[in-house]
Image (cartoon, rainbow, N blue to C red):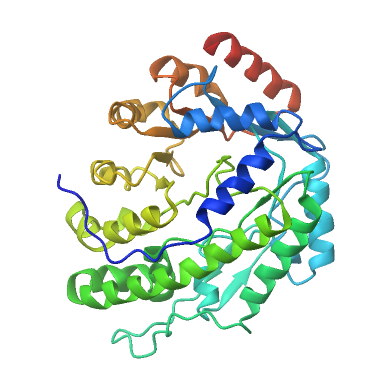
Length: 378
């Protein structure tokens, strides 16, 4: 496959300075993670499709099952109560392996839609966005983030609140801005956007270009706030990086064919990755997996994360795909149940392999799994 061409990349002038700050933070222990320097080295090896000593292993457990840990979305309009709950959640989280202590400024998926004026409904652990763009796109937003936008003000407020407290103690985890294709999915509706892919592709291209510019501003602001305070930051995959990185995503690709994805959405994904310089693509579910070959044709993407999807929890069923990704010189992040961890480690190359355990286990059971993992992998 030939190289993917994309529109002009808007540079981020602070990338080099941010990398220097991240490297300084990674060189020293922090209060809630004395092993940060070694964990950071392990992640750096993973980014390079290499191995420090063993594959990356990330897992957490609730150390106090009588107090459920949720995303605390219902507290977003009460910053002090939100922070208190999130900080307590962090303290009650039993971390294993390379899991990093963090407080996530979490608005649910695709907060860019809210930044463009969409109506978002919040529950304790989920959000949903009301589509509103008409068939002729006459009422589409102007794809600008207003300084007075409620969610933009709150995003910066909470990022600042966490960053000021996190310095030298734990990490800031950023909100999921969402991929541009998924912004359109939320604001237009799935059936309508599928129709637009066929009937109005130019409207989609124009919107993707506009959304890219606003994503750029929001992404830059999150790094500016956290690193300006001297706090390290991660994104929702919780991977450490000594350089800024991004998670391009397009869950909408599960609804369209390979040629439509490659033509309309892959160039925008490649541009996001090229803008930052490090990228892990979020491949969500079996219907999205058909696009893996197209993604492997994008050199700007260093790694792919795969979620098996609801109703199909087995990651072992996708070993062939993971092996293909590794053969193409990319790292993989596999979200999997606890009972599949050891089999995956035996089936895949240890270089460039990261495992994220998504089974709810007790702390003791998780410790036992990690001990067995180390026996197998070291």
